[in-house]
Image (cartoon, rainbow, N blue to C red; front, side, top):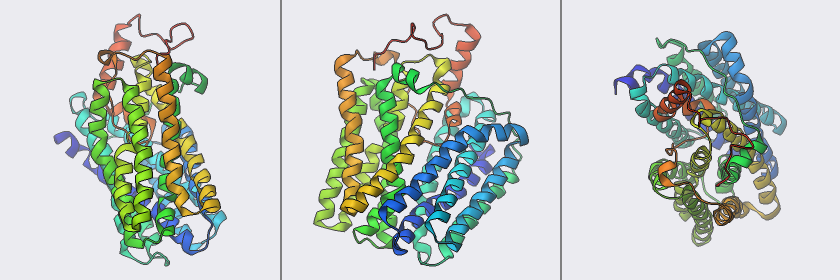
Amino acid sequence: MQAIIAIATLLVGIAIILIGNGLLGTLLGVRGGLEGFSSAMLGLIMGVYFAGYVAGTLVVPGMIRQVGHIRIFTALASIASIATLTHGLVVHPVSWMLGRAVTGFCIVGMYIAIESWLNSKTANDSRGHVFSAYMTTTLLGLGLGQVLLLAGDVDTLFLFALASVLLSLGLVPVALTRVREPVIEDVERLGLRKLYEVSPSGVIGSLFAGLGTGALWGLGPVFASGIGLGTRGIAGFMGLTILGGILMMWPVGKLSDRFDRRLVLMWVCLSSTLAAIAALWLTRIDTGWVLLGGFLYGAVSFSVFSLAVAHTNDHVDYAQMLETTASLQLLWGSGAVVGPILAGFFMQWIGPMAFLPFLAVAALIPAIFTRYRMIVSEPVAAAEQSDYIPQFATSPVALEMYPEQVEEIEETVQDGDDEATPVSEDSTTDRS
C-alpha cells in the first residue's frame, strides 16, 4: 500500500486523463452520427487514432530522452487537450481525422512516460501491487469516461470542453509530483517474420485482438446509436463491456497458467465469437439486451491480447520478453488501425447490425488458426510456461513493472545463462 501511495500522484494524473479520453472516444461516435457522418467515414476517423498510437510508440521514447518525462508529459497532455477541444469547434471529417491522429500520438506518449516512471521508482517487492493498480486504473478511467457521456448534450460543445478540461487537469498531479524522473531505456523489437516463426498463434492472436478491440472502441458507440439506444444506453453498453473485461482478465489468466495456453486462447476466442452472436440475438429480441451482450463479449475478448503475449513469451528467452511484447503491441496497434476502417465499411454497406458479426469473425479466425496449430505442433508443458500477465495495450514499457519479469531478466543477464540466447533460426523451436 505504501508503494501505491508513493506514486499516487502519477496514477491520479493518468486516471483523469483517461477519463477524458474515454469520454472523447465515445462522444465522437455519437456526435458523428448526429452530424451525418457515414459509418465508413467514422471508421476511418477512429482508425487514424491508432495510427497515431503506433507512431507515438516509435517516436516518443526518443523525445523523452531528450527533454525528460515531465516536460514531454505536460506538452503531450496540453496538445491532446487542444486537439480534443478542436473536435467540438470544427466539426468536419478531415479536422477530426487530424485531431484523432494527434490524440492517439499524445495518449500513447503519456502512457510511455508514466509507465517508465512507475517502473523506475517501484521496488521489486512492490511491483505486483503497482502493476495491478496501474492496469485497474487504466480500465476504470476509460470506463468512467463512458458515464460522463450523460453529463451534457452530445450536440453541443460542452462535453468536448469537459473532456479537454480533464486532459488538462490530469497533468497537474504529474507536474507537481515529487517522484524523480527516471532514464528511459531503448526497447528493441523483433521483426514480424521472426516473431511469426517463434509463435504463429501469438502473432495471429495479437493482430486480431487489435482488429476487434479497435473496432469496439471506435465504432461501439456508433453501433449502439444506430440500433436506437439513447445516450444512457450507449454509455451503459460501453461501460459494461469494459467492466466485463476488468472482472474476467485475472480468472482467465489463472486458467492459462494451468493448461495448454493455446487451448485457453482458442476457447476465449471462440467464446468471444459466441458472445458477439449472442449479443446479436439479444438485440433482435430487445435492443436494451445488447448491454448484457456487451458485458459478455468484454468478459472474454479483453483477455485475448494478454493470452497471445503470454503464449509468445513461452517461446522466447526471459531477456527477450520485453522486446517481444513491444513488437506484439505494435502488431496489436496495426490491427486496431484496420479494425474500425473495415467494420465501418461493412456497417455502411449492410447496416449497424454488421458490427457484431464483424466482432464475431475477428475472434473466430484466431480460434480456428490456434486449433490448427494445436494439431500440427506440440504444446509447452504447463511447468515451463511463463506467468500470465493481464495487460491492456498501453505501451511496451508497462510490462517492465511486473515483478517476475524484471527479476527473471536480471537473473538471466547477471548469470550469463548459456540457454538464454537470442532467438535465431537454429535456436527457435516452433511449438505454437
